[in-house]
Image 1: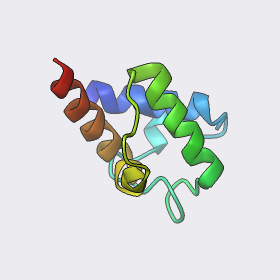
Image 2 (image 1 turned 60 degrees about the vertical axis):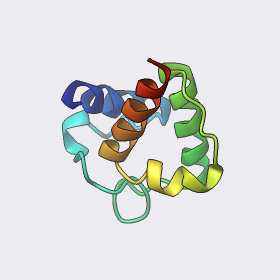
Image 3 (image 1 turned 90 degrees about the horizontal axis):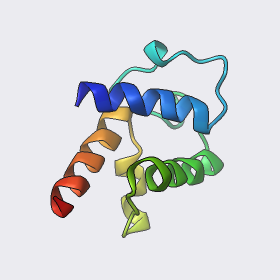
Length: 87
């Protein structure tokens, strides 16, 4: 899980072109939207693309997005759960 979260931080920075942010500056439980990294709805679409491209995962129910993308940890937990379904 720790490796996955570290990988996600680097992928988020690359996908969203956040050159001023370093992976170690993103907390595992830090909110990604609003008061955290300050991401917006366009960034949310980019995170959906990230899940599809890097992890082969599609979000079945768009209403789950806010819970999935709350933090790096919630993203990692979702990826782990989805991959265990197909394993």
